[in-house]
Length: 69
Image 1 (cartoon, helix red, strand yellow):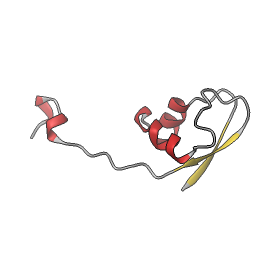
Image 2 (spheres, one colour):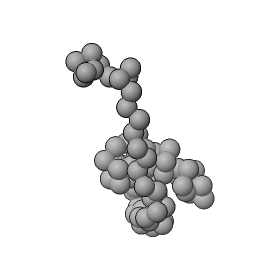
Image 3 (cartoon, helix red, strand yellow):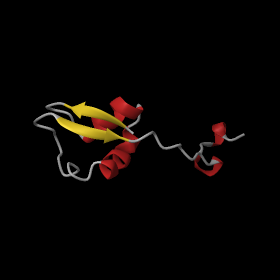
C-alpha cells in the first residue's frame, strides 16, 4: 500500500481521479482511511493510505451493444 499526502483543498473524488485515473474508486480510498473518511475537503495536510487499484470486473452484460463481442 502506498501513501499520499493530501493537501489543502483536496477532495475524495479528485484524489480518486489523481491516484487511479477514475473517480469510481472513492469507496476504496474511504475504506482504507477510516480516521479521515468524514473529511469532505482537506484543510490541512493529511497522510492518505492508497491501496492498489482494484481490478475492474467487466461483464459483457454491462457493456453497450457495440462493445459486446
